[in-house]
Amino acid sequence: MTTLSPYDSLSPVTQAAYRARAAAADLAPLPRADKDDALLAVADALEVRTAEIVAANARDVAKARETGTSESIVDRLTLTPERVRAIAADVRDVAKLPDPVGEVVRGNTLPNGIDLRQVRVPLGVVGIIYEARPNVTVDAAALCLKSGNAVLLRGSASAYESNTALVRVIRDAVGGAGLPADAVQLVPGESRESVRELMRARGLVDVLIPRGGASLIQTVVSESTVPVIETGTGNCHVYVDADADIDMAIGILVNSKAQRVSVCNAAETLLVHQDIAAAFLPRALDALAEAGVTVHADPRVLAHAEGTKATVVEAVPEDWETEYLSYDIAAAVVDSLDKAVEHIRLWSSGHTEAIVTTSQQAARRFTRLVDSTTVAVNASTRFTDGGQFGFGAEIGISTQKLHARGPMGLPELTSTKYIVTGDGHVRP
Image (cartoon, rainbow, N blue to C red; front, side, top):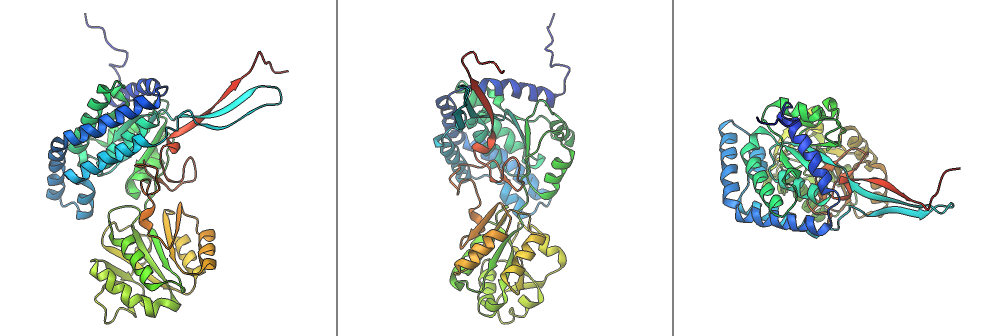
C-alpha cells in the first residue's frame, strides 16, 4: 500500500511553496562557505552547459519572433554564449560579496545588564514574478542563495524553455554542492492561475518581487495577499541645465538613451533649459539621430530641429508618461530648473533622474528637490544598477520606500531579529 504525503492533495504550486519553506529552514543557518561553494558550482555549470541553455533559449526566441514580439523584448529574451558567460561571471561576483546573514545591525548592553543584538536574517521564501528576461532567473537564484533564502521563480511563458533549462542547471549544481535543491524552484505551470496561486500563498511565501512592465507590477501589487516589494517602471529623465557642458551633456544623453534601450534605467525623456537650447539641441538631435533614436518633441524642441538629421515627431501628452524601451525619447524645453523638477514630479516613475550642469548650486538644488530612488549629477542614468553600484547582480530596483528603495542587493533580501541574552533576568 502506497503511503500518501500530506502534500499530495495540494496543488503543484502549493507543494512547491511547502518544499521551498523546508529548504529555506535548512538554508538559513548555513555558513558563508557552503553557500559560496554552491554559487561557484552554479557558475561552472552554466558555462559547461551553455549549449543546452542557448538551445532552449533559441526555441523561445523563435516562438517570440513568430508571434510578432517587438525587437526590444526579443533582445531582453535572448541568451547568447557571451551573455551566459557574463551571467556566470555575475554569479561568481555574488559569491565574493560579504554575507549579510548574521551581521549585527546594532547592539548594546542595557542598563539592567541584558545583552541586546539586532542581527540580519533571511526573509525566508522569496517569490519572483518577472517577464521575458531569463537572466533574472540566475540573478534571483544567486542573490537568494547567498542571502539564505529559498526562491520561487515565475517567469513569463515566453521564456519558459529558457527558464526551465536554467533552473535545471542551477538545481543540479546546488544539490551537487550539498545544499537543498528545492531552494531554487520554477513555479509549476504556464497559466495565469499559477501566478494567482503564488500571489495568494500568504504564510508560505514571505515576500513577492515583481519585475517587468507597469501592467505586471500593478497586477501583483493590487491582487497579492503576500507582501510585495514593488519594482517600478523606468520613466527616467535627463535634464540639461543652463550651465551644462554641451559635450558632456551629449555624451550622457546618448549613453542614457541608446546604450541599451530595453532596460528600466534607460532615459525616456530629455528636458533642456531654455537658455542652452539653441546651442545644445541641434547637436543633440544629430547625435540622437546617429544613434537611431526618434525624438517625440514639444514645439520648442521642434523649432530647433530644422536642418538637423533628426527623426522628429510632434509629442502628444502620452509621451511624457511613456516608458518606451525602444529607440524613442520624449523631449521638451523648460524655462528653469524648477520647471524641470515640476515636470519630473508630474511624470516620473520615481526611478532615476539625471542633471548635467557645471553649477554646484544647481546640482544641489536638483538633488534636494527630486525624490527618485537615484539622482545622478553629470552621470548617465544607466548607472542605476546593482552591479554598477558594487552590490553584485541585483534582485530588482525598488521604487517604493518600504522595505527597500533603489537597486536591491543582498542586505535588502534580509530582515532582522533581536537576540536577548540575560543571566536569569526577569522583568520586574
